[in-house]
Length: 358
Image 1 (cartoon, rainbow, N blue to C red):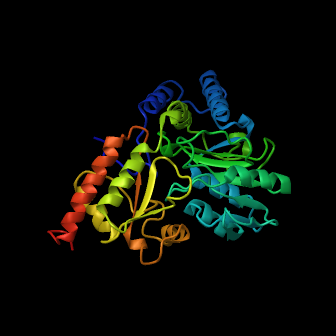
Image 2: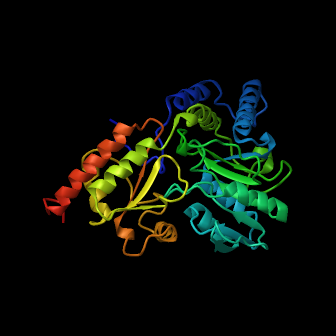
Image 3: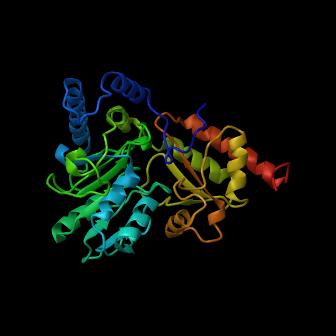
């Protein structure tokens, strides 16, 4: 039985990605910027990985900059717009919100409402990490193109769960560990191949856009993970998650599912429990071997998570009762129903005021 339900926070390393990382580490560990033969082969392998990633994303390889993850990529992007006005959606991940706030003159808008027409950059995530809500990034990208405004989407939660054609976007960011790759690898897709932006200074790596020796083994593992997961995406559906939510609503009168009435990722459920603090649910389920969350790990216990969940429709009083469940590619309907059964068991225990239930 699979008891891990925090895939939106991070994913286990896929066996294919692990094998790719080991193979690259053993055979092509050389510095791609050096001039000897083995280094040249490592450089060729790095560029081949860039081409493969480009094909998966539907973009030109020359536009891709490898980074340590989406957080670095988002900061790199907003640093390039320093001092200018940017507009982001009200439910962005902290790595977008805080980067935009630090580097630019940021404003926020409802992605389903009126879009600002005077921003230097519009940024709207593809899928929300808390509720799984799918945002209208394709439509907004098209509108920005018509208006001559650059458009960015943080595709971190979308990639690996849904089809990955981002050909209509100017800027795209993503992170390997969200789709079965290693931590410490990610990317930024630029508007065009000749664009120059740099936040980390030093050597001429990544065509002068990001200094530092490229981590080819991690990059190879990242691309292999996305290739592997892309072949499985079409077989994923929300039947398990939906059965779980139905069982939970039957067990807990007054339970509320946030974003239940809008398109969502097939793996995500953000719920407001009708009673008891979320940490009590998390702790007791953790003792039973289940991994769940109270929201984004990147803002857990901080303002960022409450800002996003409030924008998604939770009241200040409900925030302390919010729990997030996110399954993975191998999570079965039976796994989801087992989780619902243990929620019911924990609920009865908490209602009875048993040991540890205070």
